[in-house]
Length: 236
Image 1 (cartoon, rainbow, N blue to C red):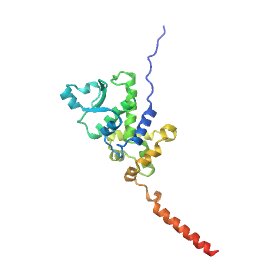
Image 2 (cartoon, one colour; image 1 turned 90 degrees about the vertical axis):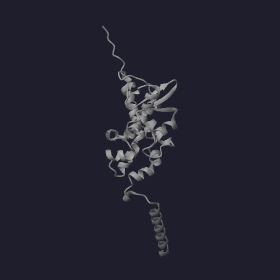
Image 3 (cartoon, rainbow, N blue to C red; image 1 turned 180 degrees about the vertical axis):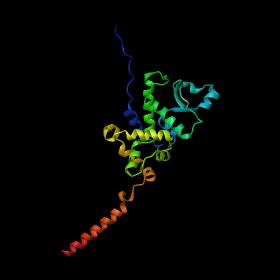
Image 4 (cartoon, rainbow, N blue to C red; image 1 turned 120 degrees about the vertical axis):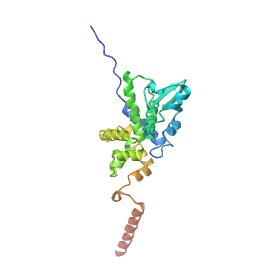
């Protein structure tokens, strides 16, 4: 008797979520610092509406929690996309939940999957990857560390406006990521992201004096060298 194994779900595509977040970090006019306004970013990038769980209950007599989440859900209704979110949660959880659901939209995920569907967990991981990168960019955290700033959970929470749980997961993920293994596509925006958010970096992780570059100091040293050369020429 021949038996057939059920089709296994594909592996999470971490690279795709990471790249989509990087492109948005570079191109968005809404993201000028951290934390940014999640709703404004979504409205800038897509035609998506928002509705609180409370409004869905009172106006449409619909308990959105029945669709699988106590925090937020992305749904397509009559051709329109809507992010329903729990207005009673703290702001940093709302922000992450909205970015998570927006990740489903950006990554063109299948909606309304049940938890029993093999693709459900894969899509959840990918949406989390997108949300983590856009809310706590890897490039900025690594640059902070290069500047001698310990990227502790408290530091990430304070600098990027996320929960301690999200900060802890982000910290652990980066600790297990080898940046040298990033592909060319994954690394192509690194310098642009660092340059765009340099003012933020200088605020949350100032460059130590011994490593800092000063145009005025460099100009003064050049003048001294020129003066020394002029003096030496007169000695000949």
